[in-house]
Length: 523
Image (tube, rainbow, N blue to C red; front, side, top):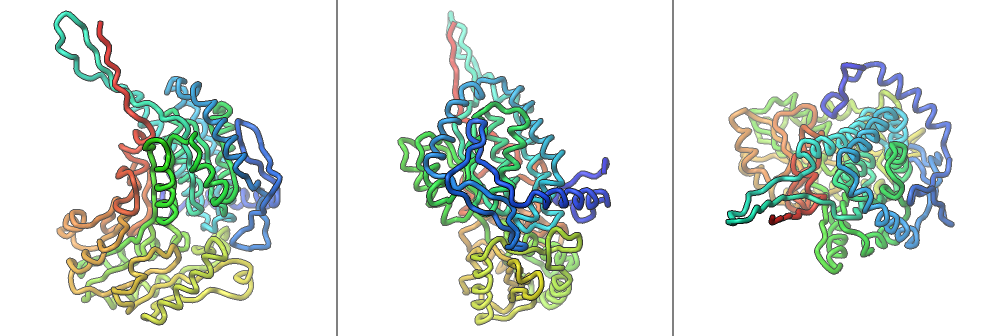
């Protein structure tokens, strides 16, 4: 594997050794089912009076871990620990912080197979997407370190004032805010925890991390990587518990100097408004989902388009904010593309995502499973199904939350589900008369995260110019709307998809975790 670099674009043809090591790690991880895991506050394991069991969506009989149900007291303790650790961490030379973070990234890579196996079991990701999530986390942390080095700590000499008889120097410095709160989602529990953490920590902030209730186990394993890398006590704090109590206590805390949240639009906007109730404006980095279009021109390579659309619509069971959820196809190629999409989708293997042959695992929980059935009932009344539309039953399917990858057709463009994010393996396909009509429909949503295009080379620049999205792909078989990778495709959205206008894993992300101070000195 020495010549193999795992990224989203390369994961579709891995070396055999990768599968061998994953299978061995899976055996070790399963042997630890049901173990209890603590919160991590001020470098110490902290246990709560109340616990909760973390069950696998693959088989709900499996108890993966016993986790702590933290409360307001734990939120306060974590914030206080982060505050106490901030002076020393922020004044540590940035080169030393980078050194420690690179150790954390190296530990993530060293543990990638066990982490990937745990993620498959807890999230339902197939083995390649799970390993990709872990590797992306290491690369995101490393990229923040690279940006700190490239910009020499973000210390920039400015112009000298033309003062006669005096020597005037001006220096611009980016300095950390203080205590940074990271609230991460279930779908990328590693990358969307570790990526923001890496940026916040490289900048000199301390961190309090709260994972989604569905994925506390894998995020505790991430916190262990930072701890084991030798970061000082209190620099990284990890708490678990319900969002409505523990999470709200964190958001309401006056100790929070900045927050990164990834999740639904409604929850993120409530957090944004709640966070605004403090004494002054504090940085709020929000990534809030998408309703991502794919436009297919009459001049498209349909084979390439079909592969890219299926991968992006049904990777991680459509539970990606970047998933391809709307496909707009010019009339002359509509029927041919439908035939190819149907053929490819029906070849997907739905099953235990830890199995090598499985491409599609379960959705995350019972609530989402119910939503899948409800959305498909609504779609069946408005149009028809090219593929899917049902949950799977019998055998292993009765133990988990397995849904069929679903393409809905003949649904009027006026239907609400053309605009509402479903976060499920469901995509709607519509026929358009022109690319201009497709672009109008593509942009007529509150979201603007990712978008894909398949067509002639002379149409690509038109697409880039007109589409309202932060991450755009043209003629990409590896994924129509998915597959951003740090250092290659920085990830972030416009409009209701993001708050900062700067993309993670890119040139302009790390400075979001710092504020500027100008130092003028007269001699």
